[in-house]
Image (cartoon, rainbow over all chains, first blue to last red):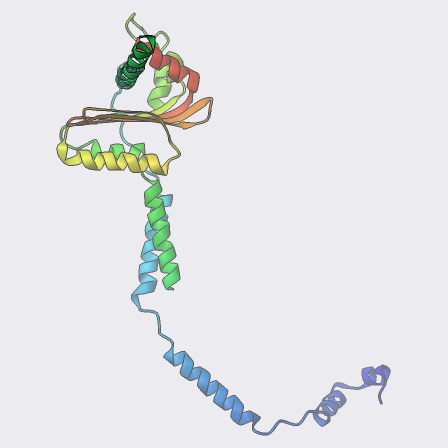
Length: 129
Length: 160
């Protein structure tokens, strides 16, 4: 039995010789089994469906389109007015439109409220009689 | 590879869905026939804000305080029957994709008015109005950092 010190003192050649001498025996039929395994893997690889040729190109096109939408600066619309006073007048008009529409909504709500009061008034009259 | 392709397609669809906003609606319909369109850019709003004394007559609402908080306005008024349905559905999609809340809805004899706001309790960052009156569809979109109190004040004043 060699000590650790003995092993450290051995040259590379001696170590190689020791390794060859101590090599484990190759099991029977290992080479054949390896060959069969590799052949089976090759058959499986061949049977796997290959991606259609156009898919990589289509993916690239989609990626390019997405990148263009995200990265390219979006050209904004042109201002309708050059004069800020005219623009102000238009903003005022827009707020008036919004208010008018809101007002018409409130009118509907008032009408609905008045209509809802009719049955209550009838009930009140009946109760007072 | 199929998964990558599907992923890119989904990404593209998502990007196009998010692209639906006031600007895209304006750009899509502003050139159509029987459509009047107005766009006021953030730069123009800054210019309006610099007008020293905006004359406000007795019957008008003083918008000066609110103007400074606005950064964009899109208006589409369409009397074009062939695009009205599409305009309505685009606006509805825009409302759904954004985080807009219904402010008011009124329906009467075929007239529909819907108003939506986006923002916080104190600030309105987006306002959208869709009004359908017979053959006329009006879409107004406002962007900015508008104090909610100020927006309400202006509307109440205008109603008076």
